[in-house]
Image (cartoon, rainbow, N blue to C red; front, side, top):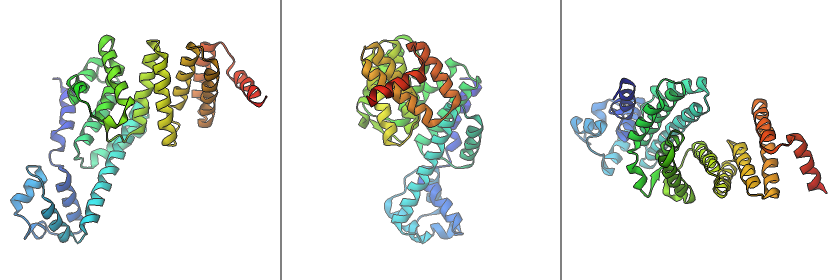
Length: 322
């Protein structure tokens, strides 16, 4: 294990050893409410036992948690609601960091990473996602090789043994999606089949919270099935991605889904569906209004289909009106 890999392992474990979920939360609230630690634990548990809670050596029972809530002067229901709220805000922050990394928004990624490092993360999924995002950032920046990135990502989710599990967490699926972009040959095909099974029944993906990450995985999968000339799978995956975007009222990667869907229908000689998909791709591009992206897709589309993109849209609208 090299120096850089050891850093990621630290991020996964040692760096967060003093950040055990509810114990840390209670300690933060206690400090914020200006309650002396000795007074806080008095009549509930010994100071030694309280330290065990904080260090994760044993779990806090419900009745003890209720007594601590009384000490804090906060109703138990509200205390638990605040705990979940704080936990969710941290998950959102790390998701933003990951999305900034994969979109290569380096300034935003650096700012978010700084915010995360100032907080005290404690959830296992949060540890994994933050460590993974940090590694992906280094890989995209050329600081670690493809082989090193593959090794760390595999180690972090116990790949390939994880493929035997029926249910996977959203973070595990995210890491598998990253591995999909690195692997080749039979390993890539095996991984592609597993991810396809998961997205056929998304109930098998636990805690599916990062919609952008799921869209990114679906886009990569659609592209790979296209190279394998499995155009029916391309259409199916693009439809899933489009549905997710509509449900989340997000246009993230929709231009890719409509573009790949148009390509697939063209190869399948379903020309009406091809035209509809290509028209929707045009709409998404101009709705977002990113000039560089519009130029990029116009070049791709005009090369792929030997058409003038703007002219195609005008003719499509004329046919619809008539």
